[in-house]
Amino acid sequence: MTKSDSRNIVLTGFMGTGKTTVGRLLADQLGYQFVDTDQLIEQRHGTIAEIFRTRGEEAFRQIERDLAAELGDRDRLVISTGGRLMLDPRNVTSLSRNGRVFCLVATPDEIFDRIVKDESRIERPLLAVPDPRQRIVELLAERSPEYRRFAQLTTDMVRADTVAADLAALARSDPHRFAIDNPSGGYEFSVGAAVLPFVRQLAHIDGPLVIVTSAAVGELYLASCGPVDLAVTLPNEVGSTKTLAAVQHVYDALLDANIDRSATIVSLGDSDVGDVSGFVAATYLRGLDLVHCPTDLIAMVDTSIGGKVGLDVPHGKNLIGLFKQPRAVVADVATLQTLSGRDFSSGMAEVVKHALLAGSPLLTELESGAWHGLSHEQRDALGRLQVLVAQAIQVKIAIVQDDPFEESRRAVLNLGHTFAYAFEQVGGGALTHGEAVGVGLIAAARLSEKLGLAASGLADRVEALIGGVGLATTLPTAMPVDALVEAMHRDKKRKAGKLRFVVLRDIGDPSVTDDVPASTLADVLVSLQPD
Image 1 (cartoon, helix red, strand yellow):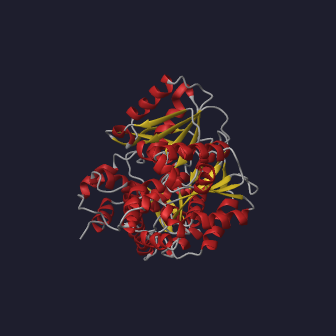
Image 2 (cartoon, one colour; image 1 turned 60 degrees about the horizontal axis):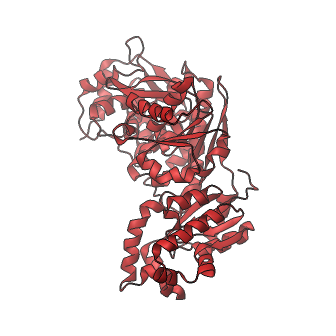
Image 3 (cartoon, helix red, strand yellow; image 1 turned 90 degrees about the vertical axis):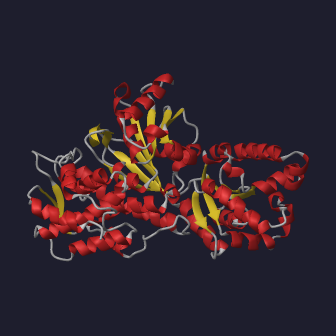
């Protein structure tokens, strides 16, 4: 993708969100041709209302599918689609292969007001009901989960030319790209918005493409990835954890499909999907190329970088593993807009960790308070998310390049994680990984102060950061200190029987110590218990 990119821009969303108005303005700014699919269908086949009356809805949907296939073969178009056109995965595949898709959203009240002012509203068959406003509410509730798979921009209270200008900036911008060096060969990390359809180009994939994903992520994004040779969905009973059973499931699918060593494994999903995919890519036929397409924040800023692959067993987390470097990472920040508030905040724990390790401008951004309770509907979220992810990954890239096989400096990336591991184990699922890391970062800062390594006030600053991104600052339930310490001793990061903790002498100045008195550790753990 380059600044002279001629790929189409596809606008989807509910009726009345501004697709036609914004689309025309955007086409003028880019010098593209504007196409409204509903208008083109009416030019060729008569009014939509007439098609519905005489031929039925299914005939209309087939006309839409044929048109999507036709437009997908062209370029330099801004395409405004009918409200349901992009809810059909076949149309997503057709239009995504040569286009970036953006969804315009608005509130039911705003949509109703716009449609009332639209003299063509009588030609909208779906609103030919006694209470069109209530029908809008019902249809939005039905379609919103599917619209959320696309990069979203809100048009409420925003001028159409402003929305068009924002879209033009996104369309003209290349993804942020970062080169990552390691002894087994370098690779590139690309961060952008609505770039998932171009994974083949960004990752330079020539041979067969195999996508490994979860059921939930695959339903949202698989159609956007274009033609694939094989898609393997991890079953629900194994997809939520990184297990040998999940690996075997993928092996079986690859063998049944006769996949050979020319194929590339693409992980599409969270950290668990990435670990399963990485393990398979490292071991199937003694090794296939691997590309990560992370779809949550933890995977984007942390686990997709550095090549570490870990599987869980009943004895503990990540106890079986290896190193498998990807050939590329393609992070589409639009996928973050589908995360729940809890999952997004959980990912922010890793962003905070990187800010504490580096003391970079990322820290200033987090302390601004702008990332508390971020909504996927924020109009400017895409640009801000792209910058946030780019800043966070640069911290980890610098560390893993300095220590690619975790022999020395890379250990500082475990800041807060020895505590977090114990919180997850003893909590029995009460915390997400990110929530456990958040409390673990506070624990590490308090330990640093109690050991006399950090000045007073550091822990308060870390606690404010964690709270500022929407995470809890204490444990959700009481956890016995002796059980937490026992769990820490099962952590793979221990060495020669001693627990190892990453501590902070100051922000941007981490170190590792195994000289922690039991009483000091107990005091820290007691301080984190709920009131």
